[in-house]
Image (cartoon, rainbow, N blue to C red; front, side, top):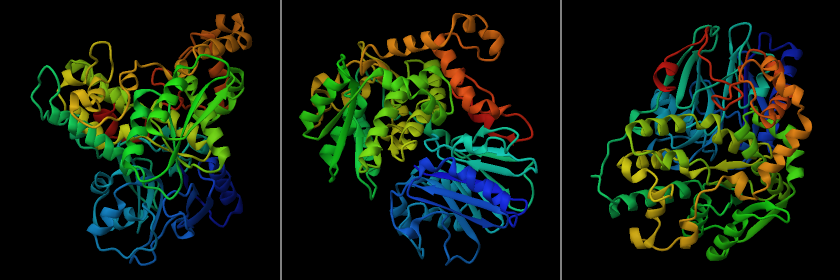
Amino acid sequence: MSGLYLKYLQDPSNPQEATEAIKRLDSIKHRGPDDFRYVIHNNWFLGFTRLAIVDVSERANQPLTNPFFPVTNYIICNGEIYNHSILREDISIKSFSNSDCEIILHLLLEQDISTVCNTLDGVFALACIIEDKLYIARDPIGIRPLFYGIDQFGYITLASEAKALIGSCDQVRAFPPGCYTCLPLDTPHHTMEIHNYVPSTLYNPAIIYTETEQPCIEALTQIRTTLIEAVMKRTMTDRPIGLYLSGGLDSSLIAAILAKHAKLSFTAFTIGMKGGESPDMKAAECVAEYLGIPLVKICYNPEEGCELLADIIYHLETCDTDVVRDSILNYVMSEYISDRKHERVIFMGEVPDEVKQAPDSEKGYLESVRLVKNLYKTDVLRTDRTTSAHGLEVRVPFLDKRFIETVYSMPRKWVCASEGNTKNLIRSAFDPKIAGCEKYLPDKILWRQKEAFSDSVGYDWRKSLGERADKLVTDETMTNAARLYPQDTPKSKEAMLYRQIYDRWYKELGNVEISQKFRNGIKLSDAPPLVSDYYNSNEN
């Protein structure tokens, strides 16, 4: 992960303005511990705190500018562009680094921003200056975070996390995934159009197979091949790789693909309660032994996790009960890995359920698409913040856009749950008895039942959180909950505890709406003065 911050300075010669901008960039330096720098161009402060992953040399530090270009150019991009080498070969460029993000500058000289975004295969949140234009864009799923607001003078301000915008904007909003905007550099942005660039085929591709009782071999082969490619392209790194291995289907498949196809070494990490029943740890041990990969077992005390709640909610920027609860163990593992000072790229088998199990009806399919489009407010947010808090980069192959499109191109019946098992299609694609492929995992792992992460690492985990909330939140507080919080009133003591902690950090955000309905502390708003063609066409 890395962090970006962009701000228009009214008077760049005023040291107080520049110092304030540096302070705000510093608030997200945890995202990029390897380098911290900024430039000021035509009043625009472009700051970047870098986690060096691809081309770790100084020439790849951001903000990037290509001195060979005939026009002014700068880019700050928190992202990984997996097809940058292919794109370099396709166009004749005079490169100054091996940074995967540099290719974006070259593309923008020749193509419009919408075409560029669709050309990129990767994850990104970026701001780019080309001549007198400012381009802003975010990847289709929203894997990389981006927030914005309009300052008192009418200029846009950007940051990778909302905390860097507190007190400087009228309202903090999430820049929507799969969108871009193009703005003039030298005039205020009282009116701004945000455009959706994602083709409809991502979520509604043509059904390419005839529906039968069971998926055909060709379809299963396509699913398997696409997921393998999604994992392999994400091995692009100059830093060591690790894997969160829960022992569930998703992380176990990623481990198996890395072990079988990647020519690199990696370490798996799993977590469980000290002295408690931990089904995930037992399953992870089985997977690691079968694949012959090293496994580090992290044992924790639930009280230790509870003590981290304030820090976790600070990094999450949300008080949603499910997101907070499921973030604690990710946060503990990330802290442990970061302290090893070795692995910096972490694979996670996160957030595939909404993709791989569209229910067997048109209504269910539309609900599945809605959930995937909103993952950036829930599971994607969790994976980003819990890793970036410790200077790690997360990679989630199941949210590869080609994999998503492939799954949605299958007949609905094949994708839905079957005989009590979720993710039946993906399980079948890696089962030699069904798909005729080589064996990737033991059957007891491949067909293991789904369990919530925060439950399966130890069945007493939720109980511990509830007991802590009971101690810290009084009955009187709950009686007055509606008066204290008339909007999105906490319904349980656990929810109230998270809300109170959230307010310690972010109450001063003012008119940023807290919405548990949308499961995100920073609610996407379509209120004036911003005008967007995205909200009407892509949010529902």
